[in-house]
Length: 151
Ligand code: ADP
Ligand code: MG
Image (cartoon, rainbow, N blue to C red; front, top):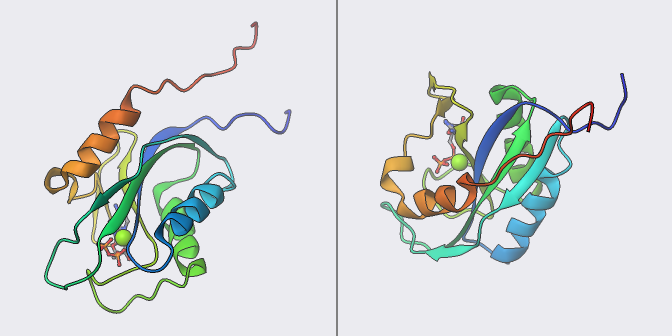
């Protein structure tokens, strides 16, 4: 089998968010790292949008972006990579819904559904976040080109 082929697999939408430090730089780091994940291709990134923080903790505004990945990783393996990338940006887990250098959430994973508290897909906050819906719509029409054996 030839190596270096494009991964085939699921279309996965990952939301990037940051509201601490150099927010644009955290997003750029995340995009670069996601592009290096095994068996994964970064297909496209949405535009970046600034939103006011939601929830009970007063905190700075977020920069948000969504990326479309094509991956042959399983959802749990992808989530473990996302947590590792968050940790590389100094993400501290403590205050739920608190400020964060980098938050990476799986919004949709193909047509799959998961109901585990450790991994719920589609992400349960999708209906409540118009900016995620806008970003999804922006990426949704992106075809994934597939090399064909006979050209
Ligand atoms: P937030 O809910 O604000 O994104 P965290 O990033 O701290 O909070 O995530 C808390 C937990 O949510 C993670 O440890 C993860 O296991 C779990 N989780 C459940 N579903 C998802 C998902 N679709 N994407 C990312 N994390 C998820
Ligand atoms: Mg998260």
